[in-house]
Every structure is written in structure tokens, then in C-alpha cells.
Image (spheres, rainbow, N blue to C red):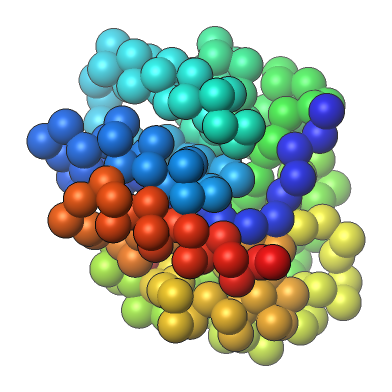
Length: 209
Ligand SMILES: Cc1ncc(COP(=O)(O)OP(=O)(O)O)c(N)n1
Ligand SMILES: Cc1nc(C(=O)O)sc1CCOP(=O)(O)O
Ligand SMILES: [Mg+2]
């Protein structure tokens, strides 16, 4: 069955979730209603990465959500889950051929509709634009404007992900302009407890009702 690509897209951040927070906070986001969960770990520790991703895959399965691996086609293929690739992370077409027609595969398009054209042609399931606002996690990411969403929505049938500085305050404007999903790190996971993450996830998810 194809995953429903609408709602809260939670993205983990290893430094932010250090000290044993990764699994409880990720599960709290899923309980709160996150539909997609991206495992974003920039380390080279392949053993830990596999173990964590495998556990997250099981959590996603239990909560009816979809796990997406950031950057790493091999890990996604080993686990049989989805994948997100940026402009320098490898070919979407190769990933689609390797992971099959059902896999959820997303591509970073920054603020360029041409990149989205290419991503769609190569088989992307969703196209991600950003960053829309100041981002705590990735302050140097290229900036995008909300007007881009109007153009993207008019041009593409594929679900649109908005990322970068998304908060409970900024998300409604993005959703109103056509974002099918909002991808969030800091405003979801920079929290003092798993309960707080769950409450925030529930509030993000409710924006899509
Ligand atoms: C949903 C989503 N959108 C964009 C990105 C950014 O990908 P990329 O440009 O490859 O940057 P890194 O995340 O790898 O630092 C993303 N991860 N997820
Ligand atoms: C990983 C990432 N990619 C971006 C892009 O614009 O492509 S912005 C970003 C960070 C998103 O984290 P936060 O919700 O803390 O701003
Ligand atoms: Mg990347």
C-alpha cells in the first residue's frame, strides 16, 4: 500500500537527541501523529546507524508510519524503507530502481522548480522545498519564499514538503499555500521531555485535520 504523504514529517537530529533521547522522542512524535519519520544521522558509525534505524523501522511499523533514511541508499535498501536524497547524495533514479516502485523516496529541491522537475522525472515520491524560515538546525541552507509553494502546487501533482524553521506558528501559512507535509526538527525535538514532544506532534498533526 502506498503511504499517505500528508501531515507531520518528523526528522531526527543526532546531536539534539543525544543522551538516550532518540528512541523515546521519536516514539513520542509517532504517538503524537507524525506520518513520516526521517532518520538523519551524519556520523560514520555504521553499526550504531543500522541498529538505530532498525529500531526506528519497527517503531514506525507499530505506529503505522513510514521510515525514511537520510542520505544512505544502502541502509534504506537493507531495511526495506524509504529514502531522502539531497542534491549531492546520489541519483534519485538509481534509488528508485534499487528500492522499487512502492518505496517513498524524496528529493531536496531547495527553491528551484527545475530541481523539482528533475526529481519528479527521476521518480521522486515527494519534492522538498526550503528553507522557508531561519533554521536552528541548518542555518546555512538556501532560502526559499512562500510564493514558491504557489508555483510548485500549480506545476506538480506530487506531494510537497516544506522544511526549514517550521514551527507551530509558521506551519499554517505553509499548509495554506500547498505544503502536503511539514518537516520539522528543532520545533519538535528541542524539548525537555518525551511528553512535550508528543504534545507538539499532536499540535502539528492537528493542523492537517
Ligand atoms: C524532507 C527533507 N527535505 C530536505 C532535506 C535536506 O536534505 P539535504 O539537502 O541532503 O541536507 P541534509 O539533510 O542531508 O543535511 C532533508 N533531509 N529532508
Ligand atoms: C535538514 C534541513 N534541510 C533544509 C533545507 O532547506 O533543505 S532545512 C533543514 C533543517 C530543518 O530543521 P529545523 O526544523 O530545525 O529548521
Ligand atoms: Mg543529504
